[in-house]
Image (cartoon, rainbow, N blue to C red; front, side, top):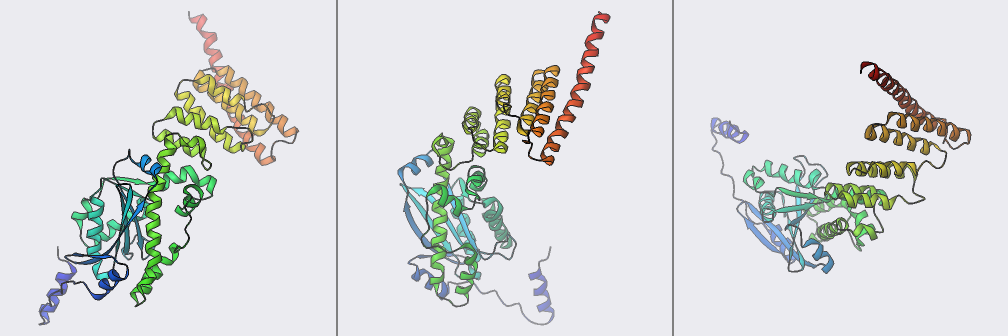
Length: 408
C-alpha cells in the first residue's frame, strides 16, 4: 500500500526533480534555552529531544502507609494544546510520578517545539512502561486516548503495545464518593473539600493552551512556570486521593466529614464487602434524612439484606417508614408488598400491603400531605397497577386451591 509520501516522491521524479533527503532532527536552541531556564536536563532521542524537570515531593507517613499495599504505579497527567482527543491536539507536557523512599518523584517531560513530539512520546511511553500500573484522573476519557492517538499518528506502535494494562482512573470513584456533597467532582473540588489542598498560585486549565502558544510565538519560558506547577500539583493530588480512597475502603468512611453514603456503599460492593456496605447504608438512614435519599438507601439495603437471606429485616426496614401518612409511606407499603410477593411467596400478604398503601395514600391526600396532585397521581398509578395484578393472581391461586381437593 503506497503512502502519500511515496506518491509525492514519484511525482517529483516524473517532473525531473530528485527527492530531497529528510533532514535529521536536532536539538535546537529552544530546547537548550528551556532546559537552562528551568534548571532541567535535556533528554535526547533519535528523533528529537525533551526537557525533563524532576522534583521530589515528601508525602505524609499515613499516605505512604495507605499506598504501601498497592501495586507500584505511575501517576500520570498531561497538559495539552486543546480539550479534544482528535489528531490536532498535542501533548506538550506530561507529568509522571512514582513512589521512591518516602517521596513522590515527579518527572515532567516538556515539549520544546512540535518537531520534537515523537521524541517526547517515546520518552513518555518508556516512563509508563516502567511501572505495572497507571493512575489517572479522567485518564480513560482523555489522557490515555489522546496519548494513543498521538502514538498512532507517529506510527509508534511498539511503544503503544508496551503501555501498562492495569489502569486505575480515580474520577469515577471520586464521583461516587464526593460529587453529591461537594456539588461536583473536579479535581480542584476534591482537593479543597477532601484533601485539604489549597493552591496558592495556580494556572487555570483554560489558560494552559494559550500559554504554550504564547511561548511558541516567541514568548518567555516563564509563561510555562505556572503550567509546570499546576501539573506537579495534579500528580501529587493523584497520590493523595488514591491514599484517601484506600483509607475509605478500609473503614475510614466512619469518620469522614464529606462522603456520599450511597456511593460509598456502591464502592464497597464493587470491592466485595457487602457487610460493610450494609453498615454504611444503615448508618446513613438517620432521622432528618431527605426522603428521596432515604428511599434510595433503603432500596440498596433491601437488596443487600435479601441477598444475605434476611427477608424479615428487609421488610422491617420499609415498615419503619410507614408510620406517617404521606406519599412516601404509601410508596413504602408498596415495597413491603413487593417483598412479600417476590421473596416470601405470600400473595395474600402482598395484597393486604397494597390495600394499606391505597388507604394511606387517600388519607395523605385528605390531610394535605400528598405533595400535590402530580405526586399523588404518580403513586396512585403504581398502587392501582399492583392492586390489579395482585387481585388477579390471588384469585387464580384461590381457584387452584379450591380445585386441588376435588382432584385428590
